[in-house]
Image (tube, rainbow, N blue to C red):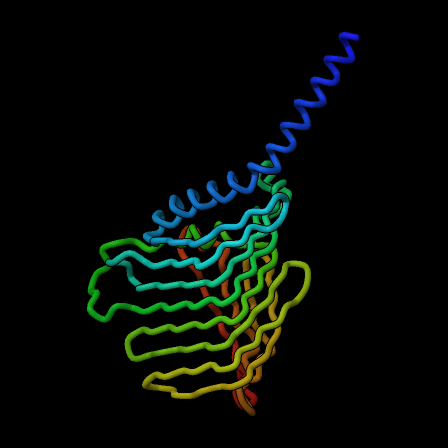
Length: 244
């Protein structure tokens, strides 16, 4: 009889713990993620604001109204706004790094990236690291309804209505409604672009992109393998009127 009571009590306690885990896990995950954002972003002289965070049990976490800005004095003025960010974690990687990346999939819908070099900044007073970006590298990611604005002196690059999918196990797709370059040496707007992507060993490749008749982008390679230490590198290969 005593053993039956002990077994029953054990089952009840186990059930209570399981129910509390299901009920409290979303709150714990949302709170932990918010605290991590507030800790990680300042390392790279970034300021972060985030609206609501949804963390359903054993399902992807969703962040609403993510806003990132760089602190004054950095080499580039950065402003990033994302309407919705969905993150699916690889829980096994937190305990065994050999099992893969900590983020399995990253989906961003409605992202606006604005990067400008301040014209009056002679010597940057604050370093601009990229460890925050390195921590967000996922095995698979999707960007949709994206806009990019780059401004450096007299050169302005705009990318509008863009989308990109990339995964380590298969090729992806890149599309853009408009890609415009405005600089002293080139002023051109390219419309309705479509190409293929590859995501291998922290290198993102966009290729097979026809810009115009006689001008193709064979490959744009963005190397993110050392983004947490010294930044990133890019390599561009063009096929221009039969020459490379």
